[in-house]
Image (cartoon, rainbow, N blue to C red):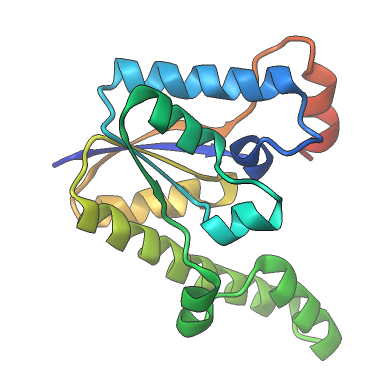
Length: 182
């Protein structure tokens, strides 16, 4: 079966937000380039949407830039706001806030978060399977890595986790890693 290579990381690295030092973004770009070249990747897909980029004042993600540079396909695989509403997907913070004000048991809140994550991850799976471009690198938040892998494995895909939670190697931005990724 086709290979899916999963890279879990912080969305800050995907978006190159202003609070992330440029050398950290450069390290992420270098990492993606190396993976794409050494693994003969034909598609980069990611947990990101055009609306998510626009909310941060960005035209493209780091992965989109790399895909264009290397001449391979790219997919913003996260559901649009309209798809999220149609599918009943909520963000973790929305579920937690509603649960807090409603006095819902924290275990039930976590179960609601997991159900919402399952819907999103199934959406990503359908996009990957529908694209039929393999091998693919899929970039997602670290909290999705194992459950997303399990969904793909259940469908018979060959899946490799390249990074559970990618962070830059030791270097000038080491203090950034320690302070912002907790």
